[in-house]
Image (cartoon, rainbow, N blue to C red; front, side, top):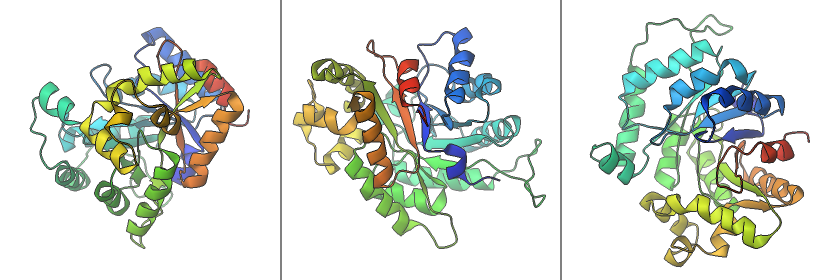
Length: 308
């Protein structure tokens, strides 16, 4: 099978895609593939189910990798996840990547009704369960004739989860992180990767806004970042990045916005993405923000398209 870095390419597209009616999903994904983006990542909240969504757009996606970034491990047991992942792996000809995460207490405990305890331990156990479970459906064989499985990445923000990603998975999918944080993450991953495993893939999602007016750009960024800043896990991560409550509480500081969101003209946003790559990111999943707040802005994708 092709190396995961090569499959992903330097840029991908990230989004929940809720702003798109069903008939527009295929054309949106097809355009992203035509523009040269290497992967489409979809998240999980309280809207469309991510495995079903990726299955629906698989035919339109050309050669893109299709990934979950991320699915909540409290939302389905490891067997259900393995069946879904192996099914998409087969149906896409090996183009699926499974992204898992522990999500957040308010989404796990308050929304789903599960106990949110020891998330690091739960992720470690979940990965072990997932790896050991049987699968009896059709599989794709590699050049050696052995059955293949999709790569697994996990959402990681802090050192212990990053170390788990390095030792037990193919990489990590961080969110709400600065360029400096990526450099720190790269070192943690490299230090924690066993000699018999490939180098961990580091694939952050980065919000992007093509807007040169600082007030407008930061206004769009503040609307996007607001729900994330309420999550304790992100607050802990931001604190380790040098921010404090004066940054992540409304109205959200300019310093936070400017470090986390890539905004400006096309050249400046491209430079910011290049900075993430230079700091150690293998792949950057672009979140293409529109002025009204949606994350499916084709104009941004067209402007930042690989090779443009």
